[in-house]
Amino acid sequence: MRSVVHYAPGTADVLELADRPVPEPGPGEVRVRIVVSGVNPTDVDARRRGAGTGQRFAEPHVPGQDGAGVVDAVGDGVTSLRDGDHVWVWDAAWQRTEGTTQEYVVLPAQQVVALAGGVSLDVGASLGIPALTAHRALTSFAEGPTELAPGMLDGVTVLVQGGTGAVGHAAVQLAVWAGANVITTVSSPEKARLAAAAGAHHVVDYRATDAHDEIKALAPDGVNLIVEVNAHANMPTDLSAIAPHGGISLYTPGSGGVTSFASRQAMTKNVQVSFILTYTTTPAQKAAAVRAVSAATAAGALGVGEDHGLPLTRFALEHAADAHLAVERHVTGKVLIDVTP
Image 1 (cartoon, rainbow, N blue to C red):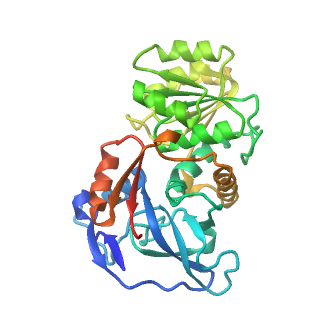
Image 2 (tube, one colour):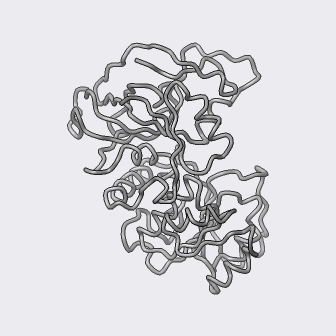
């Protein structure tokens, strides 16, 4: 089978195409023929981690946490899936060397999830890291729901900072599906159009207006939840906009890597701040996210593509390095790799 591998950390040019044996599933495992692989910033970070140290891997590393394809074989004891099922996979390369940027991958059955009929493999490959992160960001607070479903966020106002990134886009869609009133911020008129297509009820272009004032005008009593992409820059606005007893979820370090809080302001409002890393959520939290994301997907709430506010940029498997570079350059939308027909 064709695999994209690297034997050392570094820039995108460490990625190379290799011919490797097709793996066999063991007990409790499923082999998936990957049709589409999704590329995320975490894949780039993992590939670069340790660059310049002279480190060499004893075995090839295949990047890619997310992907979608067709069940090709199942191991003993697997009854939930069968050959030919269309599926999406999550956390494929977390603490493993075998990711989704190859023609076949073997995973524990729990990490292989059936796609509802009519849901495209492009949608499946775009779930994983973005949608599971977004779900946790919307459900990590003490008095809120632990699993989203229609109506679970009725009466809740959600602010998604940066609503056209992959996580922000998924957060907008999931929050709308669950009944929230959704405000999102963007940096251009084109991104404003995309955020509206994703379903956001109110879009604030922070380069064209005073975002702080506009958010306060849209939610004079404050927003209840904030999904935050750059807390280093946005925390003053967040603490001003958040309602008493509201929650702020941080899923990236942001541009500065260190976030400072106006502690008295946060304490006065009894604000909760939640730090999110989807890989290390508890098994119960991950299972809830997988169930909710699957339900939202089956309901058509997590569409991708230009019409759904998440343009797709595609690369062939042999151009995986270019796909990584596109993510590094912050291309708008979702980067996909076409692995097999």
